[in-house]
Amino acid sequence: MKSLRFRKKKGIKFFLFLFLGLLVTGTLVYFCILYVKAEKVLNKAYHPVSSTDKKATEDTLMFLVMGLDNNATRNLGSSRTDAMMLVSLNKRTKKMTLCSIPRDSFVQIQSASYTGMQRIESAYTYGGPKSAVDTVKKLFNIPIHHYVVLNFDSFIHVIDALGGIDVNVPKTFAGPLFDTGKKVHFEKGIQHLNGEEALAFSRERKIDNDIMRGFRQQLVLEAVKDKAMQLNSISKYVKIIESLEGQMQMDLNMRQIKTILQDFLIGKDYEVEQLTFDWRAFSNGGHSMVELYQDSVDHVAHQLRVSLGIEKKDARDDKKFQTNGKYKYKSDHTTATPESEKNADTFPGEGLYIGTEGNTKTGDLPNKKTKTGFYD
Image (cartoon, rainbow, N blue to C red; front, side):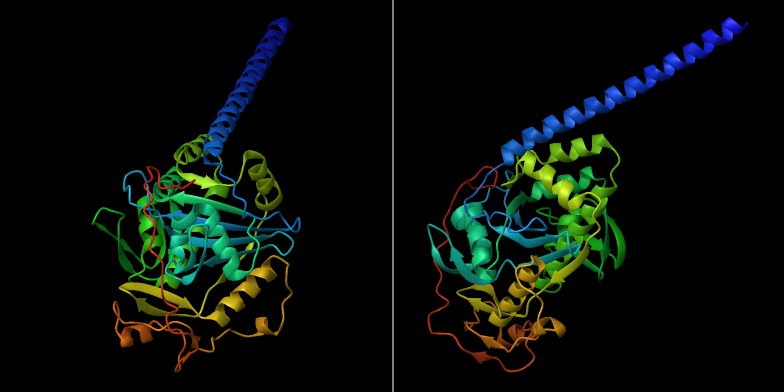
């Protein structure tokens, strides 16, 4: 009898160890699949540029994240960055700083093919990610350590692979679904969004303006981060990685991503700071433009540099910023009336023109055919 019980216990232990062995083996296989797939996707996406900077300290990083308005389906004549966002991480202060740059911002473009005034969305059009990085660095006088470019397909697929995201919608509105002609209704409060709905939420700007559009993009970015950190399924990570194949461009390799995850993201709970601008709308040759007031740009640049530990806080940080209203660019009112432009102006008084005649002249946009939307 004793011998029978011993054999039973031995049999139970054998099957227990067999089960655990299979479980561990299966998990390792999944991790191997995940690593191989990730390496394949990242190798395809890897596109270093000479304009990114080396880290000044071990505690801070600055990313430029861009979203393209082009993909294989749309196959537009050229690609522009429909969204541009600076993301600063400071693990010492435990602060994440987000700054969305309005795509119509009228700025000096920095590229090998063109140096002149144009909407900031066209920097990528003139010279790919290098030109976009150089333009943003020059505008704010900041280092940019890494860039990431995603197209709309990747945006939709990643959020769907996550199982959707929960977003706190600031106000009720209806927005168009991307390239479908249909609309989706957004109700104020917490709402669960799939990929298409999240894209519609992020791109909508007719209900208010480009600045508020940037805030919506930041809400989606935070929701994606929160959902990704909650994942406990390796298969979902595999789906996310598969959804990104051929849909992104960046200067990060596997080693760098691993380091950033370990040093900056895993186990970190960042306080989120959102930066915004004072600005005015003006029309120029049939195109809508956004002028970021220069003193506002200077103030945001200071806040970005503080987030990186390059500058210290000073008297400017003790009170809410308000522009002095000095503007550089005159409107020709080809796309908007003086009244509508005044309503879009964040300066409450009468602005003072300090520009020069002819400073709104722009160069022609290049026409670059691309199957994926990305430029080399």
